[in-house]
Length: 86
Image 1 (cartoon, rainbow, N blue to C red):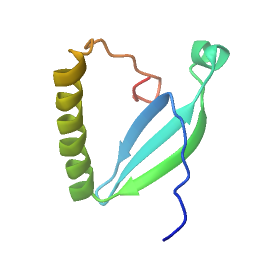
Image 2 (cartoon, rainbow, N blue to C red; image 1 turned 180 degrees about the horizontal axis):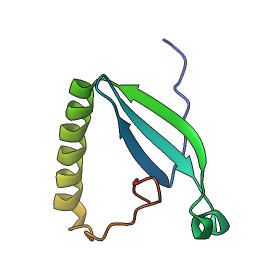
Image 3 (cartoon, rainbow, N blue to C red; image 1 turned 120 degrees about the vertical axis):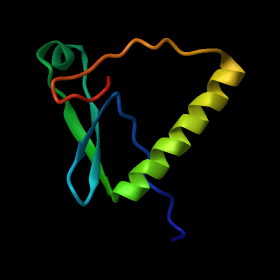
Image 4 (tube, one colour; image 1 turned 90 degrees about the horizontal axis):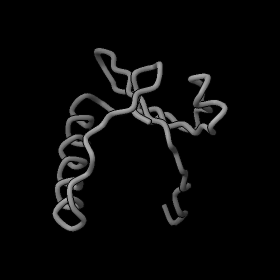
């Protein structure tokens, strides 16, 4: 695996879950799409439930470290129609 992974920017995010896996959906939208509740899906990452739980722990740890260095983040939440964060 000498190739560099593709890098993407996303400003929408949602999660779907089934008995066997979680799907992390990343998307991109502009202001017009935002007003309509639309976005372009750019990537879906499927992981097992145990891997999803590990991702949650890692993300929480990274957020704690970020806030320790840069200050608390606002806790307001924006959601899109599919229940994901924006």
